[in-house]
Length: 429
Image: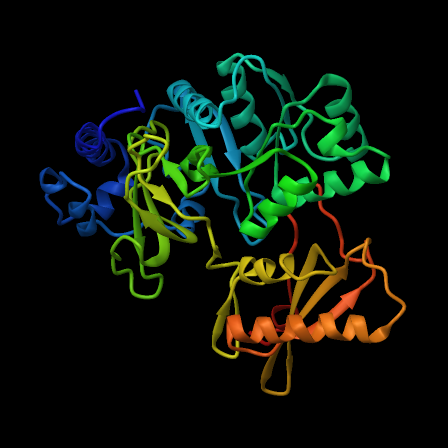
């Protein structure tokens, strides 16, 4: 079904777009109000979507908990939700058909990187309200693979399971993958020699090409990027193929636009902006023009793998994870890319934003690599100066570099906390 000519994919999109707009108009008071004054019969193509206002995370929170549900309550079989640390959580409802579609999309994601029924898939994403664990679980089972539902945490046990059960595919955040590799070596296990990890599927946080290199050097044979969020189902919205040159969007289920996050203007392919997604097949809570807050680039060129689904380039960051330092927008992935190619540094870092007087200040705390041996202070100063210079060249601002001993940056068994914004804590923003 998904290995289709581009023309067929586009025809499926047009048909399903007309259906979902009509469905929402008839079944959602929220969207009926949002579509007021718009002739829904004129919404026939991706370009026509521009007539429709955006949907935001605040819309979901403001209609908490059931205001965006479009089906009879008896048809709901599951809820997932965000943590809700800044207000009401974003609750997402699922019907049986939603679960069926989501499982199939996760299966596709595994298939295009050659995961099959002979593989042992260890899932170290969280199970529960977070969508990561269950999405991969159902996709892998549908594929016929052997699933280890390890969830997050218990790192030493994770490594024992990998070794004893012969895990061939690991699914987790990239920062946790780096941590697993680190702990494995502490336990006397060389992942590349002693484990059978042919692939790692890493998502839920932005990561850089240099992080991929570190993961492939120290942990897995191939590191692949996956994209998703609970509002759109969960993981499985887009996935890298074996060529690792962008993530294929499953365009028979989603329409993606890229907009200027400040003006809302739709951008052309190859222009960097915020990703906006329209769901085409969700039953319980379809969304029109949902602002994901993720920054990326759309690429509609043919891919060498033969799939005709458009690709998004690696997520650069989220608009709400972006730091604004002296008028310059800074994403953690930009800094990570530079850290990871600097000899003598580990991949573990944290960004601290502060303010001195009226001036913003960016502090980059990064660990010295464990295998970096020196008795000379000048060697550390040279690393510090090199990193300062490269960050200034890349970002256009000065950053204070703090080199710390190995294992001083907090580790996470889920999403890494890369940013500490002291300006917010002190009420300066």
